[in-house]
Length: 159
Image 1 (cartoon, rainbow, N blue to C red):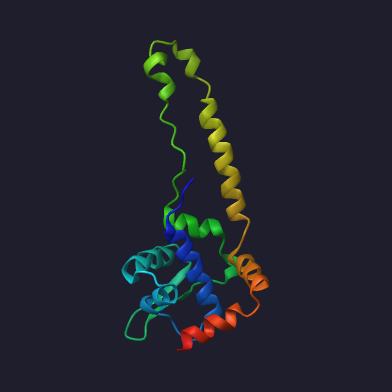
Image 2: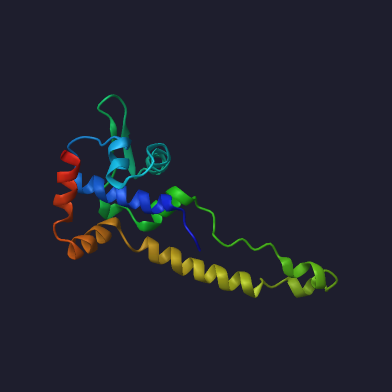
């Protein structure tokens, strides 16, 4: 399964906003500059996070984005769903009923397709794993790896 780069961007921006705190909203251009991302495309991801209730948007000259809720209440699945949408990754099209299976009796297709069943089971495990991990846990892991990371983010954005 492949996710768009928007998921990565969105998670990093949420972590950045957490390290910066709630003092003032951060404009899209500033968030984009921190990662050398195209502001217009990043803004689409940020707006999707607003729509999902993950971020809050503040309009005006001193506007921008801030977290709408604490990282402890945002899961990786929340972000993936906000960016990628709620649809399942695997879509069964019942190809077993075409070609060589087109003439087969209907009774052979009453049970769910084994391929579809296996893929749905795997996707459910993947979704449960994403739903079980919060962005607070991701932040903690990042800070264990680089203890001064939060301070570095604050210094860069204070420039």
